[in-house]
Length: 216
Image 1 (tube, rainbow, N blue to C red):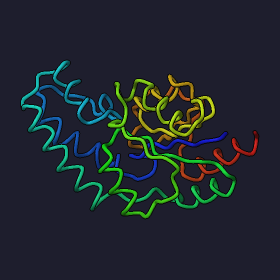
Image 2 (image 1 turned 90 degrees about the vertical axis):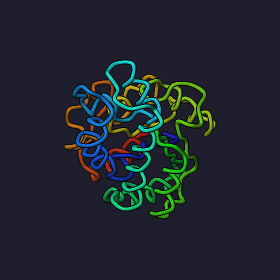
Image 3 (image 1 turned 180 degrees about the horizontal axis):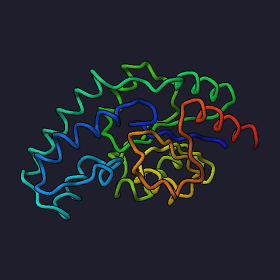
């Protein structure tokens, strides 16, 4: 294992808990007429979400209003509500001690990622990749993980990816990375069958990443 690539929402910070609540209770009812399971959009780039909703459901609002609503919610979640996942700072330290490089690979735009990294003083990452950096479709397509691996000078097969959403797991697996699904009560309705293995606690994730490194 040369590199560990972390999704941000639901893996580095607990923001997915707040996103699911706000999307289910506020955003989706305001944007589309039908009931939409939140799992259908979790892990996708927020601009691509509107395209998906507009193609598959009856949208109530124009794209500009949707974007405005989404960005307002994002600002509140990342600046006021989200907290660092338990033990994550220690995990980064242990990986760095072993010479393992790490990166954030997120569907979020760069400025949202920057809010998180600055707020929690996360300076250890060797790369930060947003869906905005790629010229192609975001998760669940593999392009973002292929791009991240290239940025770090490795192949996807040299990477371990930690993802919590079905779309993220599918993206990482399709790229050829060893994929760990981080399962929480928030994503218990997601299909993680494409993952190589599942973990359900911060301690279990920490243990498995170190064990996978030590086994190589």
